[in-house]
Length: 214
Ligand code: MD3
Ligand code: FE
Image (cartoon, rainbow, N blue to C red; front, side, top):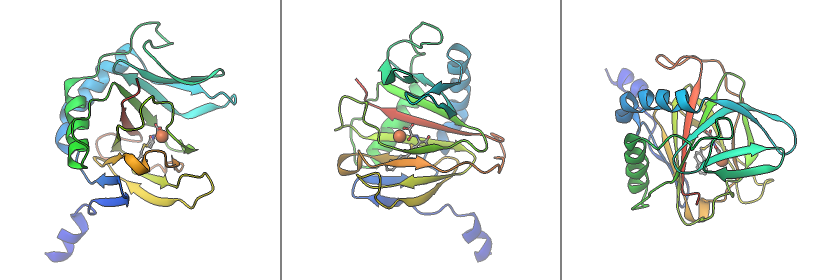
């Protein structure tokens, strides 16, 4: 049944730039461990919608784990050791998160990745992330590892200037993107999510973004 096999095969791994790679379904073997660990994190530091310096409430809800967490408010974007919502340290990064991030970085050619921050984004249908650069981290030498679970998203992969044309890249459940080096400061974003419920996670997309922030 050749047609069925073709239909079910994941798309191949995809180079988006010299040092930007999508590893299709790389995270699937980790999902059974990662989702219960995420439930523990959100019990301590719940998902919340943050306000940008410009005064907009983000459509994406977020939380963090690890030594540092990304936050936003009217005063700006930054990494903090405490969750501003609880006043306590962010939950520790689970060992299975660390193993996943390290293995994906290794597979993409970045050996020895030890992230100190994991931002967890939750997208409901309609949520989006406008074009931006990740530049609040202290060290741009380390890669960023991004894990997609749940509903499909259309990812925008731009250039080093906001006005550069952007490639549209679909990211499915289990896909992991790794980018560093020359591609580390590319503009990127996520188009508004369509409501195409995922068979196990339902009408949401969860994105884990692992970084060396401090
Ligand atoms: C960049 N999150 O939290 S990471 C962010 O899916 C953020 O929630 C998005 O941008 C999200 O700062 C996107 C995904 C990503 C995937 C592949 C890339 C970013 C990339 C490839 C090259 C450069
Ligand atoms: Fe980003």
